[in-house]
Length: 316
Length: 314
Image (cartoon, rainbow over all chains, first blue to last red; front, side, top):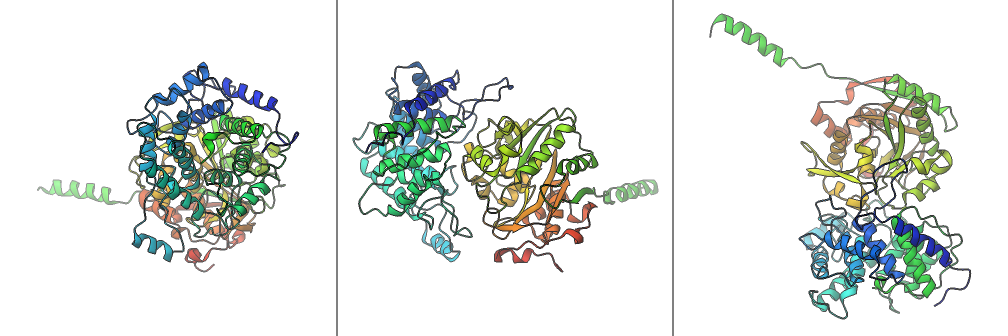
C-alpha cells in the first residue's frame, strides 16, 4: 500500500528530525529522553529506552551500521547489559526492567550485537507471567477483576502487574527470533508459545470501545476509554489474520487519526494501520516532537509511511 | 536507695512521663468563587500568611495533571497554576519550575497543551519538567512504611528548596481522597517504574503516600478546591465546586482540612491514619485560619465502596 501524495509528511520532515536526533546524542553514545534546559550546565544523561528507539529510528532509515553515531549508540547499549541478561532503564538504576525488550529489539537490527541477545531473550521469557493459580483466579473473579499477573502478560517493573505496553514490546522483541533460530536463542516452539500467550493476554484486555488503554483492571474502571497510543501499540503486536477479532480496534485506530494526536500516538497508530494493510487518514500538519522518543517514533513511522510498510522489526 | 535518690529519681521520672506538647499546624481555607477571581493576590496573601520563605529560593510547583479530558476537572486548573507561578515570582523566587509526571499517559506536554497550560502560563514549555523523564537519583527511605527500601526520584524535585504541591480536590477510587499527599505519586518517574507506577500499588498505596511525604519535608500545599471532582475520581468522576483554596505547610493537616470540606472523615482515610500512627500527628491538631469549615463544606459524592468515609453528622 502506498500513501497518496499529500497524505504523508514530506521527507524534509524526516531529514530535520534525523538531524535533531543526531544532535541529541550524548558523548557517551547514548540518548537522553529530553534535552536539558538552555540555562542548565549539565547535559541530561543517557537512558536505555530513548537510546534503543534512536537506534531503531536510524535503522529504519537505513543508517549505515559503520556510522559512528550508530556504532557508539550500539556500544553504549551493549555495555549496559546486566549480568542477568537484561537492561535497567538507566545505568544508575539497580533493577532490570521491561526496557530489556527494547534493547533486544534494537540490537537485533545491529551487526554489532555480539552474543548479547540470547541472555536478553531469556530474561524476557523469564518475566512473562505464567498461569495464575485457580484459587487466585477465583478470588479475583469474585471481585469482578482480572488477575493482575495474568498469563502471557509482562510487567513494567519486575514483580508488579502485567500491562499492555511491556507485553506488546516483549512480543515484538521475541518475534525477531522465531524464524530463523539464532545461536543462543531458545527453541522457536518456546518462543512461539510465549508470543501466543502474550497475544492472548493483549486480546483479553481490550476496553469496551474495542481499543486498549494502559491495561488497568476493569474493577471500578469498567467504563475507561482506550488510549490512541496503546491501541496502536497493541495492534502492532497482534497477528494479521483474517479471523482475528481486530476489525473494531482497527476502525477505532483509524477514527483516532481523524483527530489531532501527539507525535507518539500518531506514529503508533500509523504503524498499526500499515501493518494491518489499512489506509492511513491524512495527518495534516506534522506533530510537535517534544523529546527524543517522539522524534524516534516519528522517524520510524515516516519510514513506514514512505515505503508503505512498517519496518520489519515492528511486525509480530 | 536513699531518700535523696528516691526524690530526684521520682522527679526525673515525672519529667520524662509528661507528654510533650503536641505541635499544631495552621491551615488556611479561603473562598475563591471562580478562576477569574484575583487569585494572584489571594495566593500571595496565603504564602505570606504562612511565613513561607520565597526570596532567592528555587521553587518547584507540582500540579496534578492526569488526563487530556476536559469534560471533568481532573487536572489542577491551569489558571490556578499560573496564579501560583506569578505569586511566587512576584515574591522573589530565584527560579520556578512547573513539574509533573502523569501516571497513565506518556505525552505529558501534549496533555498540558490540551489542558490549557500553554495558554495560561507564559513561557510554559521553558519552565516545565516532565518528571517521568527527568534524570533520577537513588533515594533511601529510612524506616519505611511501605515495602520499599529506596526509590528513584527526579533530580528536579530533589534539588529544589521548596516543593509546592498543587493538587486538585478530588475523590479517589482506591485511596478515598486524592489531595496534597497523594499528589506526590506524580514525582515518581515513569521511566523507571512504568505507566502506571504500579510499584507504588504493590508496595502499599497508603504506605507509599506516607513514605514519599517523609522524603519531602519542605513542602507548601495549595489545593485547588475552586472546582473539584467527586464520585469515581481521580479521572472518571464529576464536577463539584466548593469554591475554596486550602493551604498550609503540613500536608496531612492540609489534607485533613480538605476532607472536612468534602464532608469526608479524615480519620477514615488510610494514609492519614497511617501518618498519624507514625508521627503522632492527629487531625485534631489543626488550627483553622480563614473560613469556617461549616460555611464552605460541600459533600463530595462517594462511590459505594467508600460510603463509610462520610463524616459523621454530615
